[in-house]
Image (cartoon, rainbow, N blue to C red; front, side):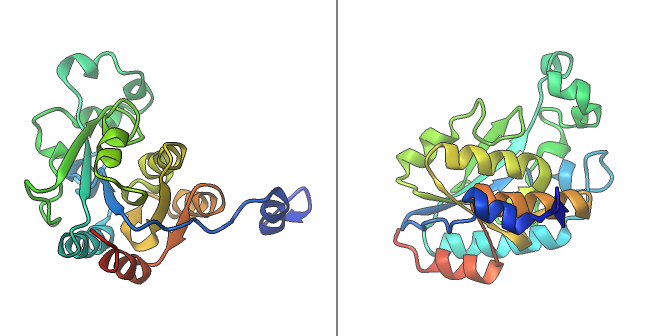
Amino acid sequence: MSYHGEPTDRTYERAGFGAPTPRGERPAIVVVDLTSGFTDRAYPTGADLDDVVAATARLADAARGAEVPVVYTTIAFTPAELGSVAWLRKAPGMAALAVGSPAVRIDARLPCTDADHLITKKGASAFFGTGLAALLTGLGVDTVLVCGATTSGCVRATAVDAVQSGFGVLVPRECVGDRAQGPHDANLSDIDAKYGDVIDLADALTYVSGSKP
């Protein structure tokens, strides 16, 4: 791929993008919106994310064994918000994500327990309008592994806000997914160039298992 005649990787290299992300000793897993509304294709917002759920479950299990915190997020709108949130005017299919509905529950295939943290959000980023940054800081976290859906939406927004909040960002490629391959690939490439490192699940498992609680 090229833009104005120059290959993309050369353009990014010339711009100074793509340096490796430093990895700290206190990681956390942030699982973005792997709720039924996103993982069940019966919902307008749903997609085929079976492999993403399975890979994320493996990483969350490894995190628990290493005493690494796991934070799950869900999008859930109150009745008042369904008529007032600007995002829903652009994406009306997300109106199915109503507070108390099955759509906003964490996918039952994930090992989410009362020992894990749950953040309810109203926008794309897990950080915007939530206490996530304060929670991670209080836990002593220095590096965030971002999992979930969708790569081009809430995962990307969370990765951007994570690095802007002072955390190193890693994105295990098997643990994120989207509704279409093109946006998925393009956003992983851009995250890897500018905001964090896109890594393999095996690398993420090794890193989490070897971290210091």
